[in-house]
Amino acid sequence: MSTGTLLAIIIPIVVVLALIAVAASLLTRRRRLRGRFGPEYDRTVEGAGSRRAAERELRAREKRHDALDIKPLPVGARERYTQEWSSVQQEFVDRPEDAVHDADRLVTSLMHERGYPTEGFEQQAEDLSVRHGRTLEHYRAAHEVETLSTRSRATTEQLRGAMVHYRALFDELLSDGGRAQHAPS
Image 1 (cartoon, rainbow, N blue to C red):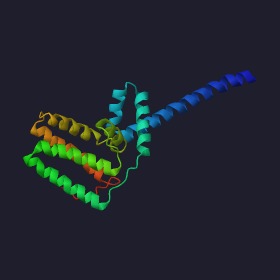
Image 2: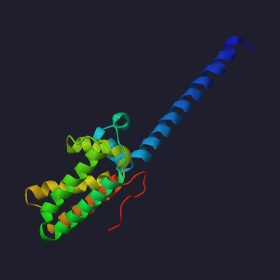
Image 3: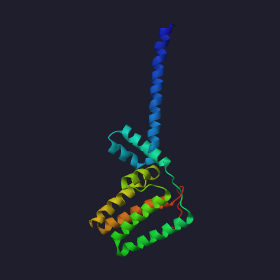
Image 4: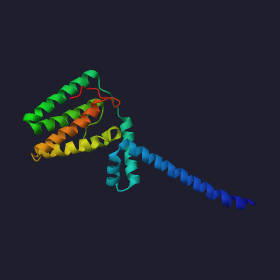
């Protein structure tokens, strides 16, 4: 067989194998991002206009998150936050709007103490999405009701729902390595 014939056979095979390797790499990366970010992956794809742009944004979030100094809470701080949450829940009975605002402030304080920047809701959501992608929808829903509440437009049922949503994120932020570190309520 001549060299030209061998090259005509080998080059297309190498190109096909390279294309298969690139496709497999993209699929693996997509699965990893989807697994890590959960529903936030689809939300970001929808908002970015293309899967490629969304995945680039999610990788940038991971890089930013990796640069943060996220730390577990000492036992005393976990107990203090747990007590503060109980107070906020009790406040809901008489002053539901105030309780929702206080729940928002408590979650933001907890984020700050753990090492998350708290310079605005959208940035908070992006930073949280890296480790808390499955709980992030709770935070978005709670924040939406809290915003309505600021204008006295939230119903009591919406306020109750916001408390439940804040609690989901609160519990996750309070935990270490997925293990809850507080007493159940």
